Image 1: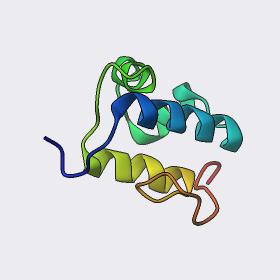
Image 2: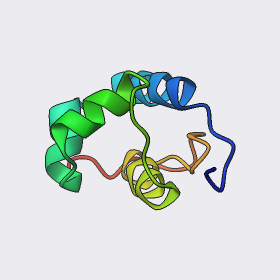
Image 3: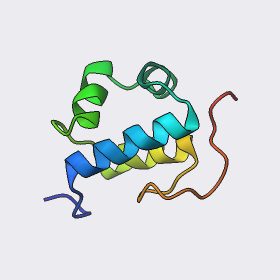
Length: 78
């Protein structure tokens, strides 16, 4: 069991929505954060999970907190 009771398909869908809103592609996210493209794709499609630590890094990059709620400007384009 994970530290947070996260529903993986919902988190993947939420992340996809945020990526669209922030205009960040899966390619850009995987390249900038050195994520495995296949694993990211599986997460976005609800078939894999990420650790809370990795989700925190992804959320921070996009300017969101771990619950994927907007909190500051994203770090894209730095």
